[in-house]
Length: 343
Image 1 (tube, rainbow, N blue to C red):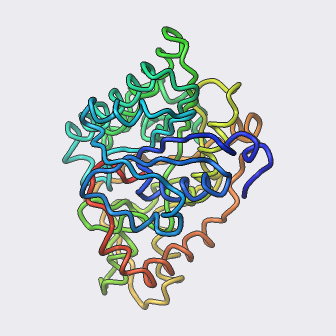
Image 2 (cartoon, rainbow, N blue to C red; image 1 turned 30 degrees about the vertical axis):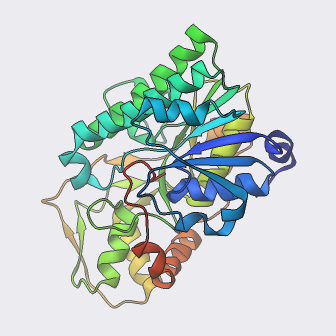
Image 3 (cartoon, one colour; image 1 turned 60 degrees about the vertical axis):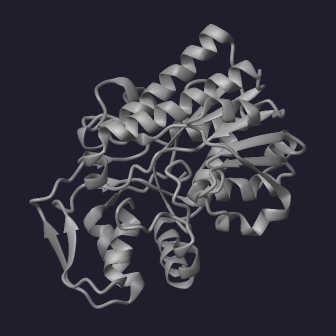
């Protein structure tokens, strides 16, 4: 959904989108092109551009490693009106996250510091930072209001990723105060949709369940009690929320971007079986961790301050995701192997 306000804000603007070749980033870049923005996407040598094939003629690609400040500065100094920072390490599911707290924290912070300091020195007029609902503690209220993002330590099973995103928020707010930067912060909940990461080693719960079920797993095993809940946001709604957060420069502090639908993991598994048309028996494995018991999005501030509401129902979005997975094998095989292009 392209609104007149977004058209007015982005048309003709030079936008640098880190992570723009990845899952959410490619959806965002397509929307930016539709809005008339002049988009540049920094990528590594190994990054696939398959997800940008629909807009390849309208997007400038710059080779740059976000871990290398010199390379970041080179791209930043070419002149941009807006920097949208989506690049992030692959958090993956619970097992992957628990095994890589240190590297997830390190990789997110190194790239973020390079991008933010480079944007500050280049005097970029507007910066959009993509945080994560992983900042929320285990005992956050349900649904979680924005202020609960700092009430306690992040959920332990995703501590490395959660702390990195909380530090990104802190650093952003501090740079606003100390240096007068103009920064918007979006705090999206669990993303899903076409172009998601379907690789076994690093995928999240929805692509993980889809690949295992359609790969023939039966009984179909689901980690934990099945009672744990999540709020999922479809890829295009996610990207729309980022655009709206960026364009509304009067909004301060992190804003939740998500849906008010709260889905249990057992319900999710049942929907995937139903929509896939596969005859499989669901088995819960309570010996495995649940992760955060409940994670639900308080959408009230985004509705009030941005006018943002998710447009795609969870069941419809899940159907589209499964259809894409079945139909687009060639995209999965050529997907990026860069650890900094997954949003």
